[in-house]
Length: 285
Ligand SMILES: C[S@@+](CC[C@H](N)C(=O)[O-])C[C@H]1O[C@@H](n2cnc3c(N)ncnc32)[C@H](O)[C@@H]1O
Image (cartoon, rainbow, N blue to C red):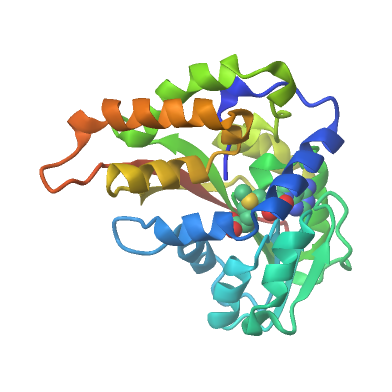
């Protein structure tokens, strides 16, 4: 899940943002992982698989914002022996606990800003599309560095925006005026720290916690399909859709289906790509 920059109001404090996230994920647990599993890189893997590849061989791994445990399950499958996850949402964690591969995982309801784990207890810390939503991200960085062994690895996936000229970009252009016009009381709190979406910003956040400069790997994900399928997948990854009532949502849907018609291929496929970035950084030895 992600958010469109222009449409949220500043959070009075971290609590408003976390309440919003907790409520959203408790209402729709599993939505994020279903969207991730459906979007592939040109070479075939999902963004979970790309991220997991960066911590192959790590024995003890912690997932910050683990939600329903889809990434942790993948890590279990690639041989990690000791897995842990933390998330704000009890509803997402309930799904994670149902996965047989996570029967022995240490899954906690809580905040990544205050990790209930011992110093130097993980070889790797991962976070997929979650770090960028977190308040006081410097504190999250300090906590990640604390629980990592010296030389341990932080590997995170953050949002990188739509592919130009395709359906997601068109959708955002059409949707922003709808989001802005929504009544103020429906607006969502601003989520996270925009610095998490740039290399320089992440270095600024991570370096004081003792991480080396980040490695930055942009990844393009294909979310194309029929126009109706693309509508479902694009609206499924945007928290901002919560600000629209049913009528406005239907209006936007019709406008999107009509406006995207010129992009549809003769085979009936609407191209739709989005970018994410896999970022890795090691702690000092
Ligand atoms: C977009 S979802 C990504 C979930 C999962 N990583 C995935 O990609 O399938 C963001 C998740 O981060 C969690 N989250 C956000 N802020 C958090 C925080 N400060 N501490 C723990 N979890 C948090 C939310 O509850 C939500 O489950």
